[in-house]
Image 1 (cartoon, rainbow, N blue to C red):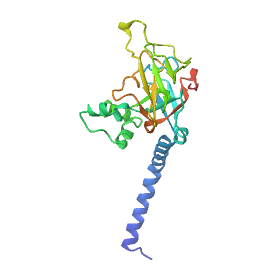
Image 2 (cartoon, helix red, strand yellow; image 1 turned 90 degrees about the vertical axis):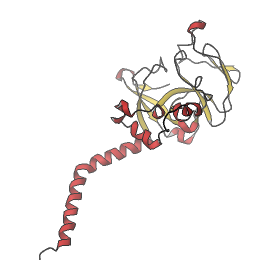
Image 3 (tube, rainbow, N blue to C red; image 1 turned 45 degrees about the horizontal axis):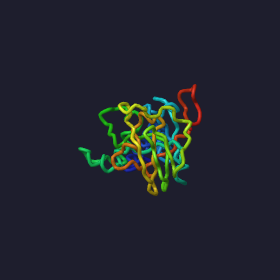
Image 4 (spheres, rainbow, N blue to C red; image 1 turned 180 degrees about the horizontal axis):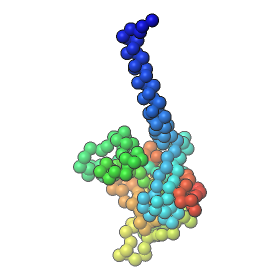
Length: 230
């Protein structure tokens, strides 16, 4: 029995859809799965600077785990990855010449391959990695060397080797005494002599917990130094 015109149109649409899905379906599902894992569970990041030396070196590749900090507040001593201060520090935002990018735009800009295009970068979309030094309610003192005191007690930091210079003309560090507000943390780089961290953000240096992306949990590159971050 001959097919009518509507049956032919329906058959052609089905054939086109089947052909499209066969070609692009696996790619689309892979991308969606990657986006889902990256947003909710874990993602890979690399170290762009020497602010966490000597433990984390430039171009180290890390797994940033996101599940644990959804259920609890960060602990002192944990290494965390967080949104750029240019996205939440009010004084830095006030100095912008353009509107603050949306979270969607930042997700697009930081997507692999696209993130390698310099013309699309925005400092507000960057991510930083530092160590949590103090949490909400802590009384914090940082001396001119970069050593820390929490609630009146000196804290041993075996992961810090590069303290601030004793020579005043070479020392960019400055002593700080403050109390951390609830819902915030204070973060420092392990390389105390060369790290743009909470000590220098113009609004006061407090990192809102909601701006933390996740916890740096595992270094997977280079192969010779694979292992946990600490």
